[in-house]
Length: 162
Image (cartoon, rainbow, N blue to C red; front, side, top):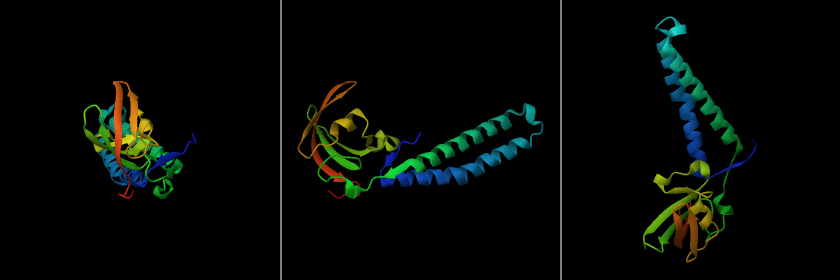
C-alpha cells in the first residue's frame, strides 16, 4: 500500500506523540507484564503469560502500522489551501436551514476524524457536501437519515486565519 495519507499539522503531530507514547511507556508496561507473568513458572500452561505475549504482539503491530502511516503521510500546508472556501483544515460554522441550529466543524482527514471533538472527515457525506463551498453558500447534503440543508456562515483556517 503506497497511497499517501493527507494530514493536518495537528493530526501529524498527534500521531507522532501517540507513536512515541507506544514506543516508550506502553512498551515498558507490556515488558513488565511479561516479566511478571514469567515469574509464575511453567510457561506452557501460563494464561497470564499468553495474555501478555498477545498484548505485546498487538502493541508491536500497532507501532508498525503507525510508523508505516507516518512514512506515507503528507502534511497539508495551510497556505496552499484557498481562503474563503471549505477545504481540509478549514473550521466551518454552519446554520442548519431546517432547525436554525448553528454548528461548527473542522474538516480533517479520515484518520483524524473525531465527531465528539467536532472534527469530521472530508470523505464523510457532510464533509464531501461542504468541500469547495464559500461563505453564504448553501449546501444540500444527502445522508443516510435524509437530506441536510446548511448555509456556510464562516470559514476559518486551522490556526484561526481566514
